[in-house]
Length: 320
Image 1 (cartoon, rainbow, N blue to C red):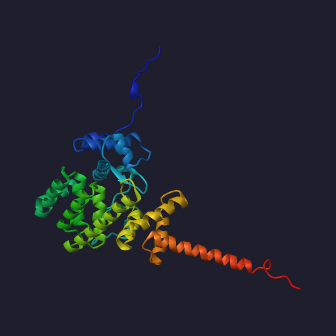
Image 2 (image 1 turned 180 degrees about the vertical axis):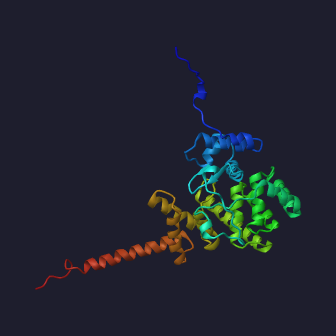
Image 3 (image 1 turned 135 degrees about the horizontal axis):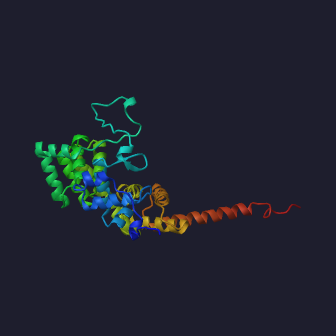
């Protein structure tokens, strides 16, 4: 007689590392635990943040924040193309501007480690500015600041060199455009640091430019009847160029769009840009001007063709 246990749906199982339960379970939020379980269940497979969010029943920004937290807690580490258990990677070397290890000591792939929870807590306790930053972030975002975001905010001040008042402006900006994920706030901080935006005047100028780009894209959406969505960097650049820099009239953009669809059967920003660039060079300000110029060119072309045809031997008089 044979014996077996039928565990039903539990016949198909996957492993959860003991360390997750023993050391980190009390620290994991509901969203973070959902994301971790999804990643463990689909080990070896690749999923976009949106797919994980839909399957786990969380928001897109929760996915990014959860992964940042898992990296911070050293449960996972990044390689060039995957997230893997931290124990399987080379030790991470933290690099600062004043203390760079020699090239032989640095792995080919390295990741700057964000401040851990102990360091963040000490900074908040010791610095009134840092305490104010965390409170302002919580008030602005309307939620408790996650450990991952706390780590990023401290890094923006300590590592990126951004003053607290500039970081607060970044938080307000990301809130205003509905992009408050930890990853996005971090990326904005990096960009501002690289661009040298470290004072109020420079930050206000940057925010004005970003607002102008938002306005340009919204206007282009209305002109072309595009369903509201976030633009790609290329789309944002084109919309800013056509509307804010070139100040093209709505009817010209619409006409260029229609010609693009008629010719290619799809929306191609590059194709529309070439059309508008040509019209701008010719100083056209209305579709009527374009139609008139094209009609004149067409008539001239036909006349030229007839003149050439009449000069051929077919129309030459016959000799005596």
